[in-house]
Image (cartoon, rainbow, N blue to C red; front, side, top):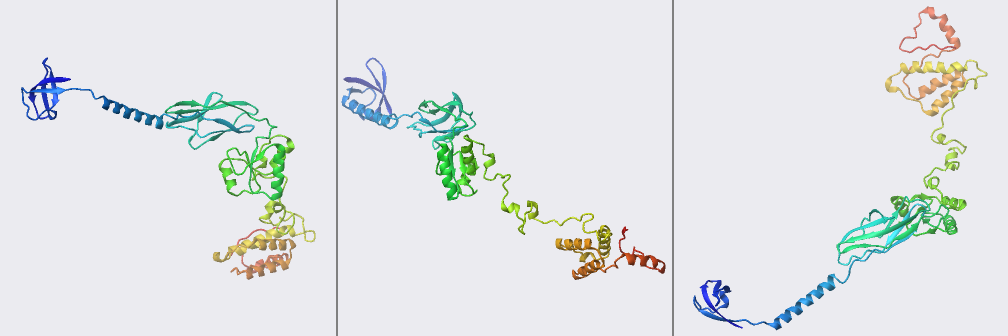
Length: 393
C-alpha cells in the first residue's frame, strides 16, 4: 500500500506529515530522507509481515508452556491423616508430609468432632500430634484442613474410639536401665497383656519403665512428661486386669511398709529408727532409775549445775569451751552414780582440758555442816565473784 504525505513542520526528533484529507501525523524524522523540508512530498509503503507474526506467535507459545510446566503442572495435595495409637484418655495422630507444590503454606489446622482444636505448629517438619484429656471409651472424629495460596484442602475424617479400662493394648513402654532378669520378666508380662515395647522414647510412648533414674532416654522421658514407673506397675496391671494409676509406682515414690536396710540398721548393727542414724541422743535421766542405793541422787544434778555456774562465772571469757557430746554423757553417768570420787574426777577433767578456772571448794554434806559452824569466824560470803544457788538436799 503506497501512501503520499506532505511534509509540514520538520523538527529534530519528530516531523509533522499532512494526509490528503488534512490530517496530521507525527512521524520520526530519522525514518525520513535527510534532504526533506517543509512542503516536500514523501511516499510511504505499508505492508503486513506475516512471517514475523508467525515467529512471534511461536516464541510466545513456547514461553507459556514453560511457565505451565514449571508452576502449573502440580498442585497441593490434601493431607493423609491416620491414627497411630490410642489409649484410655489419649490419641496419637500422624500424617504424611504435606505437599504444597509451588504454593505457599498458610496454615494446617486439626479439627475434632467438626470443631477446630488448634493449628499444628511447624507443619512442614511436624508430622504427628498427641491429643490428651479424652474421655474413656468414647468416639472421636478428627480431620486436617490445609490452607495454601493455591486453595484449601481437607483430609479424610478419621474416627477413633478410646480404650476401655480393661483394654491394655494401647500401653506403649520404653525401657530404661533394668537388670537382665527384670527385663525378661517385663517383656513376658507386656506380651501377656497385649501391650508393646518400643526402642527409644517416642511421641506414642505412654510409660517409661526403669529401676534407676539416669540415662539419656530417662532425661528425654522427663522432658516429654512421660510417667517414669517401676516394673511393678506392669505386674499390678496384669494382676488386676485393668490399667492402674501410676502415683504409687513412680520411680521416686516412697514405698510404705517396705523399709530398706539402711533405714532399719544403726551404725552398730542394731535396729534403730531413721532419726537415730544421724545422732544417738543421750538417754534422759529417769526419776528413781539407779537411785535405790542413794536417796540423794535426785538432787545431784542441781548441785552440779550450781558448781558449773560458779566455775563459769569466775573464769575468763577467752578460756571458755563447751564440752563435747561424749563428755556430756560421761558427766551425766557420773552424776547419777554420785559420791565424792565423782566430784574429784570432774575437777581433774576440767584441769586437763586447760580451763583457766580456779576450782571452787566442793560442797558436801559434811563440809556444809562445817561451814555452818565456822560461819562466825569471818569466812567469805558466797557473793565474792561467784553466783549462788540454793540447793535443796
